[in-house]
Image 1: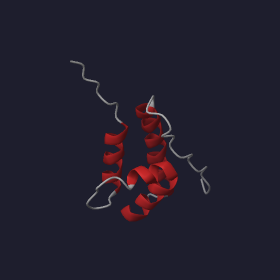
Image 2: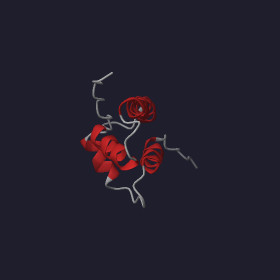
Image 3: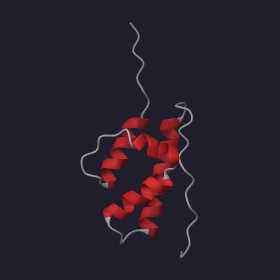
Image 4: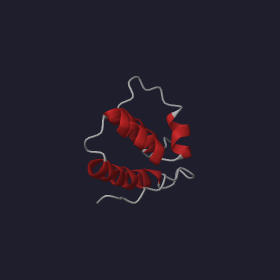
Amino acid sequence: MDQLRQLPGLDFSSTYGLAERWRKWKQSMQLYLDLAMKTKSDEEKCFAFLYLIGTEGREIFNTFNLGEQKLQNLIDAFDNYCKPKEIITV
């Protein structure tokens, strides 16, 4: 288990299916963190998360107003960003 395959970045090109793509990517990321970074600090895990999510993900991250940069805060922010938007008709 010395070398794990690097995760591909998350595809943000379309909102169609984004919630499902995020769910799958997040699961893979959690496995990666548990296997490769279990003893690392939360800050190091945040750096890995932001690196692995890709350029588009980092651009989206830069729009978030997160107080403390904790891994759970990153996950929560992307959970909120990627959740399906409600369409309200009147």
